[in-house]
Length: 166
Image (cartoon, rainbow, N blue to C red; front, side):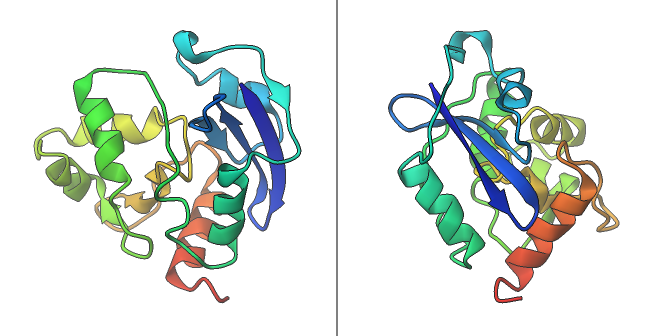
């Protein structure tokens, strides 16, 4: 397991990846232990710092430079929760940049329109922020709701995706 931290306009961003390059956890923190604590115990191993994580680092830099789909194909490996949450994380990756959805719409996209709380739980339990874009899910009234890494970060991400040239 390897990790790297980079500076972004939204603050420090750290990714933890497996030896095969799959993101195990990521978020807007400079402390990899914040991320490792979110990971399923079966995924945790000794984490080694790296200056560059190959495709993962390139994808994040491209995203920050305006290629909002650069993060779409980065492999992610998470294990928490039941089958609905795992399915919801896959569905979340299909929410397009600049087109956020409500928790209600997200539950519908995930095939369980009555599972609004389950959809919210999938967002809250997501350990791979940015790559599994829980920041693209909003409250029914369009307000931000919560975000593990802070509402200013969520606002920055949404604004960046609305106008990446700004």
